[in-house]
Each structure stands twice: as structure tokens, then as C-alpha cells.
Image 1 (cartoon, rainbow, N blue to C red):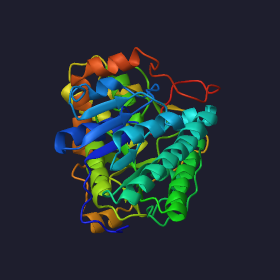
Image 2 (cartoon, rainbow, N blue to C red; image 1 turned 180 degrees about the vertical axis):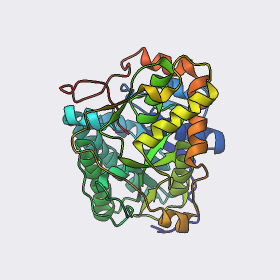
Image 3 (tube, rainbow, N blue to C red; image 1 turned 120 degrees about the horizontal axis):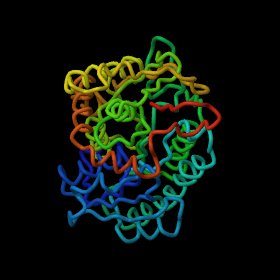
Length: 369
């Protein structure tokens, strides 16, 4: 297997979790910017939203498969039917607070689901290899949370030790190790990416930025864990999907790439910046100044202090860098939620209404980054 391709010829790509936030952004990107056929495999849990794909649903290159990635027979059937050249594996339970209350769901989806996909991918690749039919890559999309917490200085690199501190991050770390094992043991062609905190349009409102925007618009309390000193590196979702496509096409077989925005912000600064943008664009709002809605609440157990990503490797090997800075990306995000009220109101009218998810014994609303 060639380790550093001049560019993989991706005619068909299987995207798991393609109705989620980052997955749907990737699907929209592929159908707009490439000629690839896209198969979206999604169970449609609470965070999966087909309305995020309404602009592409009629594209003849788009195919939706409503199944669970843990269903081995269905996954096998999808590989046999579509014969993908690549897999982009996004499907995962991804909410830290939910993982504290219901870790079994995370073990099942993130670990068993990844194992199931790897089994099908391996059989598929071996059949391709025996026929010498093109290239294949399994791209596992992971998180910087597998590395644990940083102090006030330093950055996570691809060589950072794994130190997950929540059931969510532990399940993602386990999935990362499975992918590496299938590469080392069975020679399955793989790449892994570990990204920092994403934000942008269509993000499910349990996450910090969309929930703060929506709460501010409705005059509801804007809850921040602890004192808001926790720091995250923020990555605009469109920059992320560009990086992911570069990795699918050009990533070195068996390698890991960290993807970050290089935009570290304290949670309190993220929220006050949202408030400032809303004060500017909605000067007549009865809720202005929106910062008056901020409320500090009981901190999350084991809340990691700081994440920061060193992107030197992907910068140098794949010539990728983020285009959006945090201020411009956040403004675009706020404006999107202002002009797409129907989308997020439909989400809020469903299974999620802005309540704190998980940690049911702690009073007050809350969020995860």
C-alpha cells in the first residue's frame, strides 16, 4: 500500500453520522465541491437532523441509509452495495454530560460501532485488494479530548499521551486504539484526525455557542460552568471539513493529524463576545445588554481546564491551515442562527429544549463545550 498518495481517487465515500453537525457539513461540502457519490449512514439519534441536509437531499449522488453502525449485517450490506473508496467515520455519541449519566450508550456506539465498521471495512478492502481495484482509506474522526487536560501552556501534538477524563473521551480514545490496531494487525489503510472544538451553522443547541445564542435571543439564563475559565481551541466547521477532505485524499496511510483553529478562548470570553455581537446587531432587543443573562453554575465533574492543538503536522504535510479567525467565524455563526430561526426552533420543539443534559442530580441548566 502506498503510504503517501499523490491523491486518492475518491468516487464513492461512505459517511457515518452524516446527519450530525460536522458530518452534515462534510456531506454538503462533498456534494457541492466534488463529483463523489455520498452515502450517509445515520441512525438519526436526537442530534441527527435530516433538515441540515435539505439543500442536497435531491442530489442524485446522495444516498441516505437509516441504520445503526452497530448492526453488522446492515453495515456489511452497505459496503457490498456501494463499494466505497473511502469511509469518513463521524458517527458517535459526543456529549460529555450525557456520557457521565449514560456511559453505556457511549461504549456501545463509539467503541462497538467503530469495531463493527472496521470489520466491514476490512472485508471490503481485502476484496478490493485481491482484485487490485484502486485505493481505499478508512478515516476515523476523533477529538482532542482523548489527550486529557493541559495546564496554562503547551499544546497537544500527535505524540501526546492519551489521558481521557470522561466516559465520552475514554470511548473515543478506545475507538482510536481500535482503528490503529486494525491498521497494525490487518494492514487496513487508515488515517485518524483529532480536532478541537467545532462551531458554526447547524450545530445542535446542547453545545456552548448555539445554546448561548438561542438563550440570549429568548431572554433565558446563559449558564456557564464554574467561573468560565476553562479554555478551548475553536475551529470553524467549514475549515474543519476542508481539512478532512485533504486528509481523505492526501493523508499518509497509518498517520494521525491534529486539526485546530489556533483560536484559544476562555468560555466566559466566548459568551461575552456572543453578547457583544447580539447587542450590536439587535440594539433594540428587550434583553440587551445580553451579558446580564449570564449565570455561573456548578461545575462539571472532571472538567478539563484547557485544550490546545498543535497543527504543525497537517500544515506542513498537507498544506492546510484554517481560514477563519474566531471573531469572523463567530459573527457568521450568530448571523446564521438569527436568519435560520425555523431550523433551531424545530430542533428545540423536539427532544431537546435547552435543558442541562445529564448530571440530573445537579440543579440548573448547563452546557458542554
